[in-house]
Length: 477
Image (cartoon, rainbow, N blue to C red; front, side, top):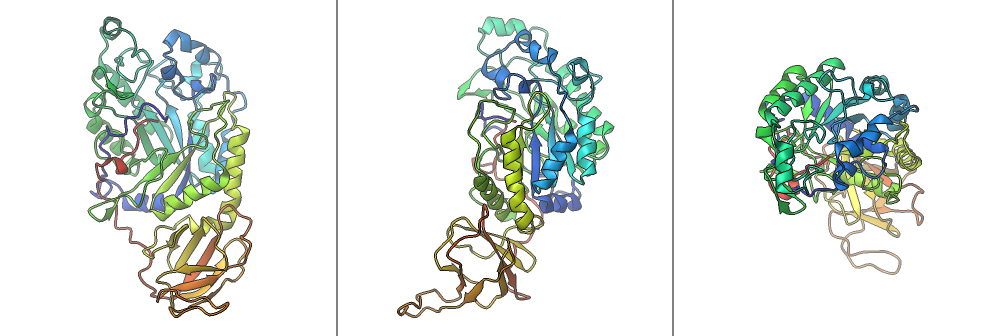
């Protein structure tokens, strides 16, 4: 993943999950999980200045070679990663098996550019899978469609050598065959999907068919034809029938992937929900970026998680382990801060989804059955007025400590002295303590009367996504 190039208008993310290609039980599981860990790890952890360092600095293979020669993650223990993810309330993880640099974290038989040929000397994917499964967490594989190291991958507008002259690029591309590269791509995917047992998610990245790079156009891009995407997707379905596949093959996938932004509302088309997963970073960089100090505060990360679930999405939050295989102190601080909030409030996230009730300003609702969760992004003085909930709530409590929250229906008449009024009919007013709970986001749990309407939004299965930019993932990972 990365913030460049901006090719957000290039993919056509649409969903097949409603066509019967995907087991609806897997879709339900995905929605129940709600929160996952993205792990970007590769040779780029050594330069430690963004996972697109080879692209940004126009590095040749020779200039990049020292990172391969010195890749030795001697402190790598994925059991620690899994423990931190579980404690943060995450229910699944997705690992970059190969990023755009072309380096394979497993013992691929199809290339020498693999972890077993570095000082690491071992497969790094297998221990990851084992550690996360031991914690009861789902496992997914990210796999780059791009490969800046493979000799058959043609230089194009997103390649590190894109700034060479046309003649130099032509010479580099002489004899390169994207068809042979596609064979290699399919072969590596087959290795990954036949060596490690059941895989929950395959996260491909990314297509750019019209060759856009930094708002300029030079040379053809690559998309469904180059990757032979339909053939590749059929391979994935055959090898892993229960898997979910994302939307970046430039053909219909199972879920869409908004990147580095919060969607305005639930993603839908023609009134039907689209399965989606927002992928976000802690500091704007996907790979380990030593000097990046732009870490989002914990309360913002929690608000992003809540906002996502309130719109029927999942959040995949990224960490970039360092060159020795450890999570850096900032990543640990962020995960642990989220984990402390999730320890008290996790039931407002896991298994929850959007509510059809209308939340007031600075509030996000999630709902699970007859429990409505009121997430307060700002803490009002005295009263919190909830439209449409009068007569529908049997009990209310702060979720962090289980203490009761009193409630009343004030009515629409004029207020008098200390008695407020002018509240619209049908409004339930909660009486709040002056001081907010000392948590990242306070949550009030409402127990609804049986049959209270309109209740939670129905999960009727995802539909094809809208081809507008709002429903597109930014196709770079």
